Length: 438
Image 1: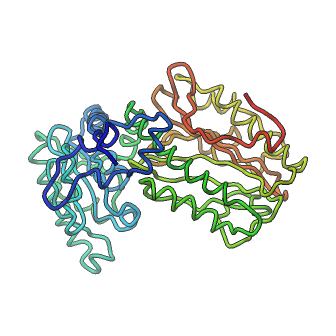
Image 2 (image 1 turned 90 degrees about the vertical axis):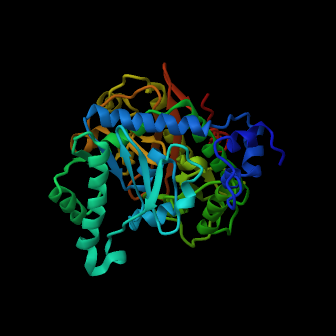
């Protein structure tokens, strides 16, 4: 592919380094870039996106008077540094972490021999070997290794905290917490401040999300073209994974695709069942796409060329009405409780099988906020308001308890200054199910 404006915009964010080639080789690739150009999508300015995210994080740290944060969750490390390495593996083997000083350096601690993975990142000041102290790595030496880890963190706090020993951390096992506290560090919960920083998206983050959705939707097109009687659920789901990875996608967080009687209740992972003509096929993408941004949409299709049954049409109509109604409510300043009370009311026969949320935030993964049904809000709900710049997903699952099937739909949107802007473009099956929503 020629180094036109699309390719050059990727290359500008990194130096060419001997032995590494260009960062462009790590980007989404020609297939995705050509598709995005055809769709009229703009590429994100990665340097600007990284600077925005780091500034958002540091503003949260400063507001709480913290010297800095130790981020160990791979999603938070990615947000703060844009450094990535074996993300899923590191979710359960916490060897990678980052220290971000409120006023000082950004340091990535990486897996053995992986320092080169952050060389293209201008905002990363240093890369050091990670000191893993989880049992798989440390065995009976967990407390010893945790103490060494803590000592290095404390040295950084002393060097860059200006006497402030208040430190945020997003997650850590008890041995690490005890080791830091034994060295005089005042520890504070870091997950809230990370999610509050992540909640408001820059224009470049929204551009990245549009690209991730486009990659996801191209994969969905391959899925739908292969939907036929006899294909298995796993075979259909495999297209979503393979085609997204071809376009620079990273991983999929769930296996939520089911067919026929397995669509009710929801939350059944795809299996070896062969899909039959007349089946509903429902899925939730839940994928982390190009640039690390989440594409989280759901669709339900009818297998075969036959007509949907009256029951299937009613299920689909209710789901479409729920999504459309709740999208109309979205605006800055809308309280979570207010949203819950004003949202589409499920008919009684569908309430027992309601989805876990009405809406939730989305960014590098599903994230703050979560907005619940009134029936659940008293137990699990919390206060807050929608803000311009948030990106959210509107959810619907419609299926009677014990019913033969169900419909899952989900739409991804930006909270704009006056209302919701839908970011996902993949069409609904309104013609198939006999009703148009305009």
